[in-house]
Length: 360
Image (tube, rainbow, N blue to C red; front, side):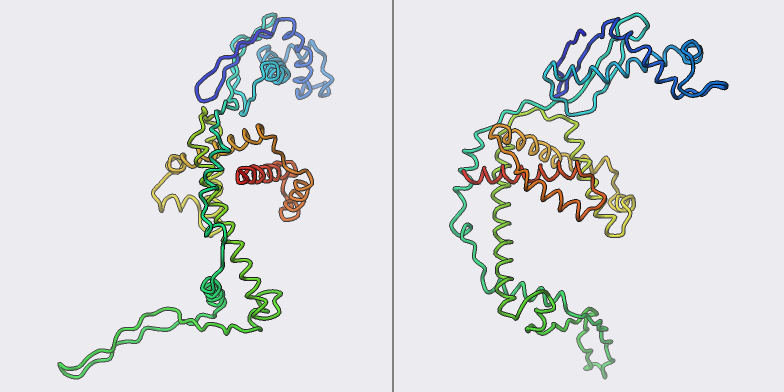
């Protein structure tokens, strides 16, 4: 097979090639047989129709198309392997020569994994983690943090009763006056904060036990927020300093994900996505334009993390992956096991990458 590979913009390539006559003709009988399995003719059983009858009833172009389909299905993976091409999208195939006793001429366009020029990501991570102040590192939970959270919990558990605005009463003469106007709204009676109240919230012995565990949770939440803030600063610096030709297909995939999540959130609120768009006076295309920058960042992030993992030989622990997959399948009964595994491996590998960067 003769193959020429040309580079196109935005990390795409075009493969132009010819499959030799003998190799292409070798698919004729198999293609004819496969087409014959689905052909129904009076007096013949499906799959048992003689070859001369098949040739009389199936157009030659249909046989040639099936031959081309079979040939490229077999040879395309071999081309990728032979030319060391990291394809990341479905191939767009064009047949440019298709005839009996002739070579099969074709062109294939596909997106490929881009070449990524990373900055000194360890230096960037070290600088940013070094700039985290002692106050940010040594996170403390104040009494105010504790009391504010307790008040929020009490408010969320409070029964609400509606009160009506009082009507103004007429005054006497010119010197008469009206009482101040009240507001309609919800008056809240906060539940008493005692041992009985905290026991209803969960497995807490008393107020002291509840406060101790709540303090731990608040501290954990603050630490997570600080960690996410640092990680975001690190990765944004790395993204800004990286060089790559971003494949359009990856941006489109990220846009699809953003819009899918958005539509799911709207639907869960009991609204129709179409009505939501009408309310905004926008079309899906408008949203895709608005979220494009976010999608590009997400696509770049995925490529950069993948590249760092390759360079630093970072892989997720197989036992942790198995546990995470089991957890996913337990909570989502209809989840596909292979996709669950890919998701778990991706999440756990990314976590190890961020831990590696933070350790600088």
